[in-house]
Length: 177
Image (tube, rainbow, N blue to C red):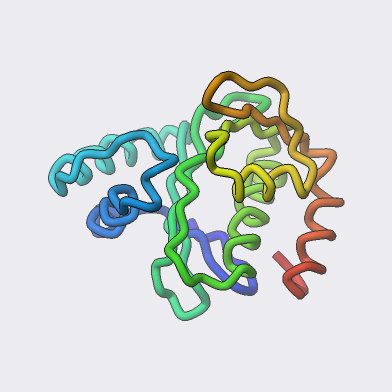
């Protein structure tokens, strides 16, 4: 499966992506706001093999974000999928990527959730210290439904998606997403 946009494509993770994922998840700067990952390629490969079983059952989707030149530039995952909602996470993008790619990756994921899976909402959390990501999600209408000492927990409803999509497309100059 490929979710194709004007600036990037989201494609499903394969075993061959293990070293790229491991490099992203263990990067000192990037991993600051992620759950801990061991620096063990075989362990990452095993995790992907187990994930692929969940993917086959349509319980989880893990994407590699590629730019328009097919360079791997990030990851994005969808999990805790039920009949009404899902949780996006593991949204990690390498430094230096165009803002249009970053924003479009979210548009592609949300379009997948709301228009392909036909879910009603997205729920996710962001570590409070990850201020750029907090600001980004609040900028398009995600609502903080509760917070604890470390995290802000958000909800974004499918009814908000058309407005968010229009706003973000104008911002990045996209003709489609």
